[in-house]
Length: 143
Length: 141
Image (cartoon, rainbow over all chains, first blue to last red; front, top):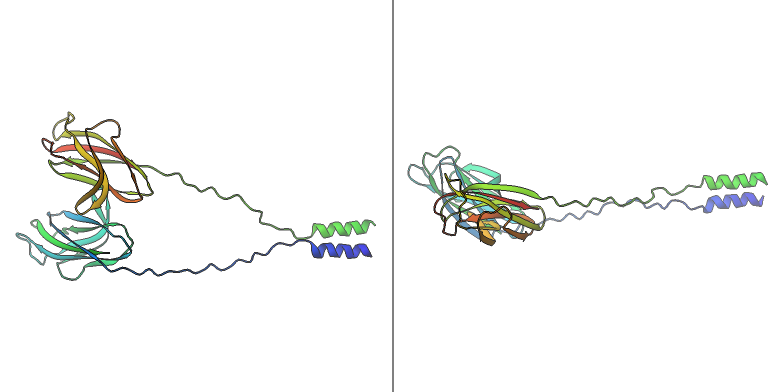
């Protein structure tokens, strides 16, 4: 009879698996606050017929970049002509844009967005409207 | 007596055991990959050209000006040009390190870069007799 009790005790005190219940992942969502532009650069140039020009700059913190085509001019170039203005990153001998709009010159930023600190470029391109090289001014504001 | 041993043996056999034996950590260390780039074009007198690239991690960039000859000529030029690296800035490359060099079969220049966007630049320091065709090979991480 004692042996039976002993057998029961063996089963009762046999080591079991530690449970290690999975815990829920900790939700540590952080919201980045976009810094406002603190630096403004003026990019003036001449875009050839069917061509483009770009300008590189480096942002130091996550924040807002505003690109504004402020004026377009030149012989045989109406000031209302639409050009493509874009924002991207330099690659090879070009600026590869991730955002681009076709727009006439204005005073409000045509391209804007929040971006991580990195090297970026603003690009002005003829979209087929030019019959002569166009002088332009672009304002680039970034943190 | 036999049934007692049998009972004990069965008790031990059916006692739950732990699973999930520890496994060896996966070896996922990646070997840095080197990218090789050929940058060729025409360099005008007193002008510069640049090529932007993204270094995926910190490491060295090695630059070789492999050829330089006047447009329409096959013989190598014997005047130096300035080759360097930097970060794209404005309408050019904001050069941080550079040398004046002639074309050669081996790399003339190397520099250590952080990860991110950089540029290789070639510029005429003022000795080119005319527009020249150049070819630069460079490698980076």
